[in-house]
Image 1 (spheres, one colour):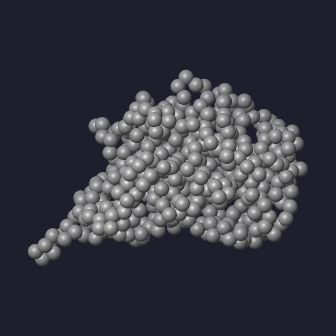
Image 2: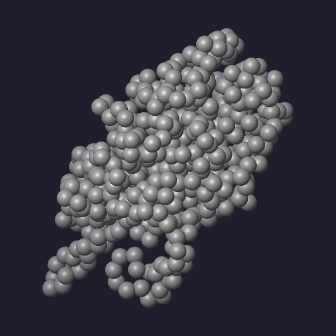
Image 3: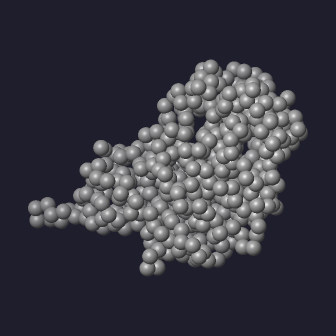
Length: 517
């Protein structure tokens, strides 16, 4: 692994030797994670439910130096969900935040707002003009097609400093436009004969205030890129132990999200526009939030129009937060899930016990009927490093304040898709590889975060840390603290993230499943 500028170099020679020793007793491992319907309140507001966040150095050919940020919302979309399909909430505020100095506070916030352009298409029926009941009145092939009864648009604003009190300026497109068309969902092949070509027309080249290099933005429906054995996991890991500890069976079960869509907010920005001015620190942190207005007044006799039943007012209230995958889903305790979704990283000290003394290993003991398999290195410094500070020499900021978010070292070069290890850094350490551009150094769509998280929470990082604290997770994080020993490297959920279909370039996520073919 090339040593990035400024960072304390990883001791790769000892690590290579350590990995060789590990590989002598263990087969390679697997990984995955996400955040669908993770907290009580958010189940009542799916339009603002953040499902996944991705942050990675762009690996599309010719895009070196760019960083891709992807926030997915509105989970578990069935492609056939007409006639209204899955429009975003025009009364919500969707944001992607970046911390570029390690203090746990946003320095840049990209704010997305949506609006519905309702055309109220009517057809002549006898001697009357009557409004149609559908989203479309014919085939669609271009932006804002005449046949679209409702055309979604969005604005994008960059706020520097605090998200509510900082300096805000509009992101603009060709000719200075500040509103951008969003493609209608993939209704089916008769309405939209060539959805990939249609969606590609909605990749907008934009100018970011204060940034000399043009960026790209896409907002629209995509096939859910997250792969997980969802029902089995939440049914107390209802799978044979012989399957989920056999690396040969990493794709033995169907991906329960394989036929679902999500709505994607994707940005590709040159790293020079994201790093702190004058800083030599190449590490950035990111998280996404969604907020609703504080109050809603329902109208018992709504007027004709589009989405007219409620009137909204008051300040913004954050109701969704997502950085590292699976944190609110399987780390934060049930009493604090809504609180976490309303919180900011700078206040994460209130949730520290969930990371230092996680309950998931104990729940796995119950689920698998295997008492005594939880790692014993409490408090779990390995998880604090991975989730709250970043790994020294890889993605830890120079002046880090412990806080939960995805962190990416923009100086570590992207790895082409075919060479990416599905287990990110963990997989590269185990195999003696050189892919250090993946999770938990940011997150790419191919990274199997469920399997990686299972390996980490059950002590895989302490196995790799060895008896000499090779990875800097602390002396207590050593193989003696891992009852599962080498089996920790073999844990998986029997669904392989690496086989999920993806695109070779921006916006990277696959064409959404069609409602009809």
